Length: 226
Image 1: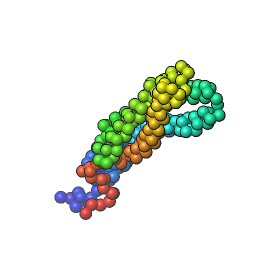
Image 2 (image 1 turned 45 degrees about the horizontal axis):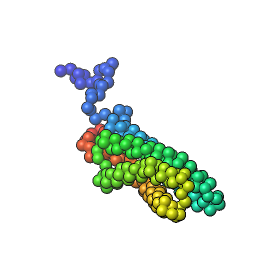
Image 3 (image 1 turned 180 degrees about the vertical axis):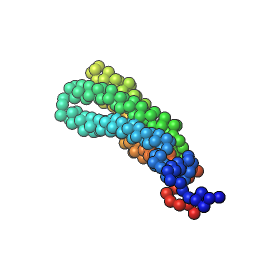
Image 4 (image 1 turned 60 degrees about the horizontal axis):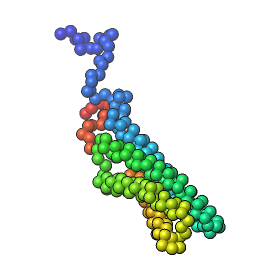
């Protein structure tokens, strides 16, 4: 054997690292596909939550503005029947807004539920329980909004249109009772809307929610191996 056989030959090309070798490359820094999907789901979840919270804020704020602020002053300052006509028309118009807000919140809830179904791994059990409560509260709120728009407000307007006054006569007592039910319905809607806003914020999704116990090893740092 020639003594120079083991020496590096001039002009030999450096060996190319083979796939699977312990070489740190830019590809090792790229996030995996599941992590990118989790990030997309988190962004969609934030958008759906923002839409739901905005709709619920409009719903609750409108009810407080009409029921707690406008109605007492209108009935105090404007004579009958103008006060009743004015507030009846205002609540009738707002009912359409309230039902629309409730349906928008339900649509956001459907989007968030689909994100949970398609997630890589289930969220912690307490978060899943709160999310389930959030869905039920959203459905109850939508039902109450529809009851107010389809039953209570039309009944009040019908009795007012027939010249019935609250607390006067048998039909007046019926009108008073309907007003009381409408007030209770409105208070319940405000309370549920505020509760639902908190539940939406509490269950906001993060990309870290889908991090599991992966068996894949992290890429090794460059340098000699012992």
